[in-house]
Image 1 (spheres, rainbow, N blue to C red):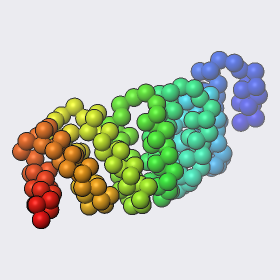
Image 2: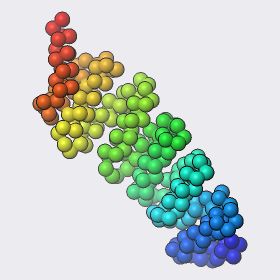
Image 3: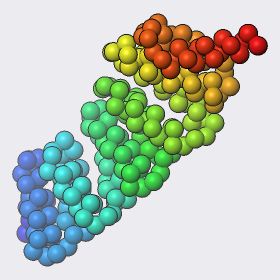
Image 4: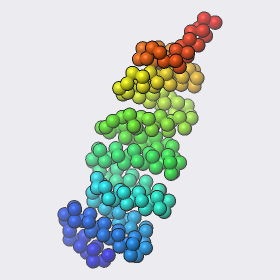
Length: 215
């Protein structure tokens, strides 16, 4: 390992540096039984080349084996801050959001990373769907308000009229049942029926609203 570290000190080529760090990680994990040191070596490799598959796959594997997802999240967060590659930033933000939801139980930070992903170029549907789930789980007034905006955006980016109608119907339900916005709910249900005239949920809710107005 010491010799390999000396090689790193004089090696400039990215591919060679990545290969050397991979060998250090292998020795630490397999020969020296140093899982933490192997993780640190792969973290250095990720710093060398953020788009390489091996460092991320190895970091994920070690984190799963040790349960140390906090360290994995730290490494990814540092990499986001250090890179100007928008595609890499978005990929890491989505993974960090998933880590925060599933392993670290931090919905607030998960929502932050999803907003960051949405601010970067790329398909919005995946990030919007994840943000919708997080906001529903948060169940606060602020989350409800942002959820309404998210559902409206999901309806905008959906290509299928049936999917658009589903999002708009969900928006109408949220406005009606949670936000006490009958007028906004009416508009959402009407728009859902414009997308899919046979949508049962939107039609039933619209009839309910009309009956309320009559009484």
